[in-house]
Image (cartoon, rainbow, N blue to C red; front, side, top):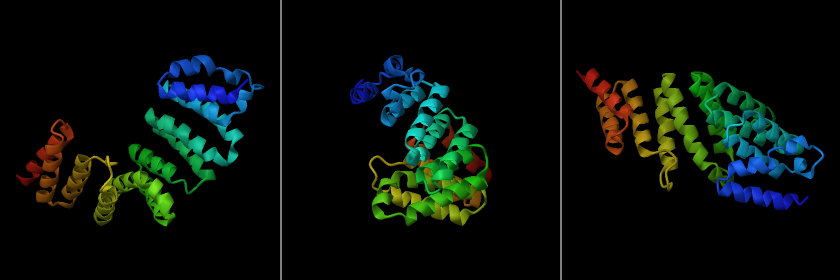
Length: 245
């Protein structure tokens, strides 16, 4: 059995979006553990990804856990990938369980810390979210320049969500600093990691919480001008006008 040829075929099918074909042809190799295919980390990862896109929770875990068994030094990457599957399904608690498992073996995993912080924000645990995001921020800042460049887009998101978390905890100065750093880091990106209207809305909400209604109004109006279809922008504008009297 030519595993390399199968891997090339699976990747070609994935590039064309033919996920059902992948699982139809190769989605049962876990039933033949003696097969060479069950010992190919790259192949199992591609099949696991296909199962993930098709929503098969059991198979995602089975295939990616097998990858972790075959490549224990990269286990955190595969555990984080399982967490990402559950995050995409908005199963925040399950995602957190896998992110915690990944971080137990790779505590400085920047992407995983960001995803953990994001999920903690979603389950309304702002202090823990800020702790995870703050750690991710520091890890990126301490990393070599080449590594920082690779993780730049993730760091932009870290700073954006850190700003939101600090704001919700009442640390307005810290929130403003994180948001300013986020904007500066994302400046010049093409396309930007965070859409400009989302940056403006985040700043507007921060100014609203600080009681600077004029600045909040300007930020929300600018966000509205960029995305007039957003009900959130209109609702927040209405709230500012209400408070202004």
